[in-house]
Image (cartoon, rainbow, N blue to C red; front, side, top):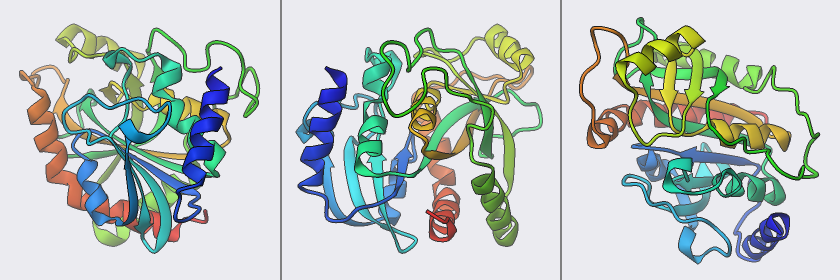
Length: 272
């Protein structure tokens, strides 16, 4: 049933798409403004797309955008879906399955997160080199989709060539980039100090409430993935302060111009 809905949604979009992009971007909390960098040729509200979930989180506009960034045709999600909104993992990752059907080959994902690495500061950008899936439901649970194997290998989930490209561009432009492991948890509560300590022991450098399910499904679809996280608060002992969603958005927005510069150049130079 879900696979039929995915195909119906993709076929509906194909009749309206002004271009055939092979690159997609997911713009997360506070990063929706990156859409301003896109020369938009068409945008569609999620509510108008057949079978598409609807974004309910403040800061997530809820539009699918077709346009150009870095002189390349792109598809962008301005706002994503989260497990804590009450969606199943199949619904959270529904857009990724649709992207595959539309011919997307490379996916750029962004998010805001709490840093657990003591070397991180608020406003740092962390390139994801790996992740820890701490969600209670797995996005590949259930019948296997024909896009990939029943038991996909996950040892190189984040594309090393794209990570290298990001480092090269950052060096050229004097942009500070951190690298690390992202841990995805269900939310919607921010972490307790004890949870932050536990996640650091696990090996996490940053913690957030998204991204991991989308990346797993993209990898299952053989889509190249580059992930980047803005450190909007700190979960480091002695530096933990009360945090709100508004403060997270504010911290993410402050880094948006630098993020846009990096993303634009990466898309311009990437092979796909």
